[in-house]
Image (cartoon, rainbow, N blue to C red; front, side):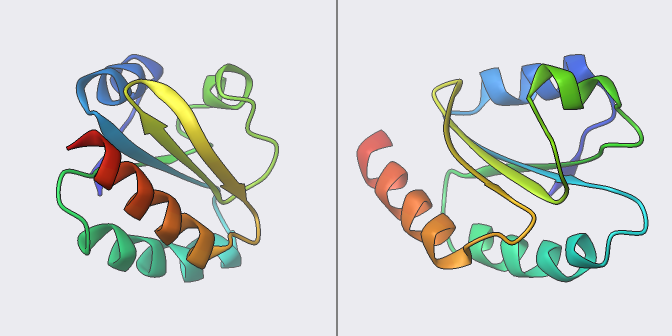
Length: 107
């Protein structure tokens, strides 16, 4: 996962990748710590999926710009538009199915 450190980098990351996954975490978040390796493992199974990670404490404007209400939050963008979102207790099977569907259609 590529570390993103400001809102401009996040916007550019989403715009430059046909299929982009953004993982948003918070400090002292146990669920964030547990979910990140699981999410990363799923992403690594797919070609042409870019992944980025950002700490909500490092980019506080992210919360209002992308309507993040809790952490972790996982957002999937296809061709620059939000296609899927999971938060707090993320359904990893649904996330994996979403990536599979979008990778088929973006080729």
